Image 1 (cartoon, rainbow, N blue to C red):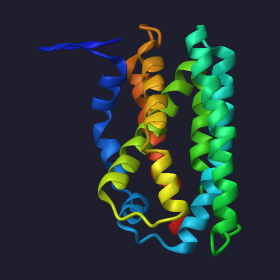
Image 2 (cartoon, rainbow, N blue to C red):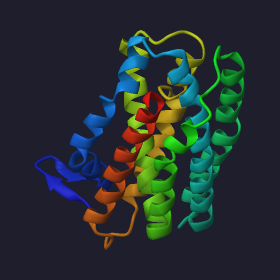
Image 3 (cartoon, rainbow, N blue to C red):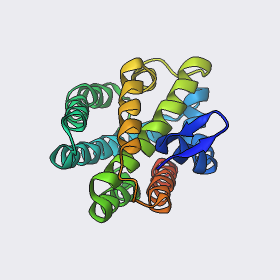
Length: 217
């Protein structure tokens, strides 16, 4: 479903980003993002982050795998298969190296405090299937592309594993993945209500905020 402006139609992904802009801005302003960008993130907070983000990457892999199974066409199948490959190779390699290099371990209880993100994404997938999977992943990856690009270009990100992670999400390959998700959102069935898609998108962003705040509790 698309809307029209004086300059022509607005894509469904574009409409979604506009409708949920306030929640996105709150997510972009969360403490974790500000501290990584400013170079003030603590060792324990980032150790906790490595643990919880690695766990969510496993969830994202499962979601993309579900999307491979339910893909409506070959293009969607290939896009989601490429995402599974990237998550299980490049990103898995990052976590192994970062945990080995980091000076302190994660706190043992952080995974339970940060379970909200996987719980929301998996519940949405059970409710809405492929359309929900594409929407929640588009929300998560749009958030990461935006804040990591800002941090990479204008921040004072610490060298080493933190800078490597930010760079990974600010590069052309990651942006291409976000664009692929946007294209899949644009292709969702026209009879799927915008209100439902908005709920999945904003709910995922709210879960992202709670997830990242867990490293400070």
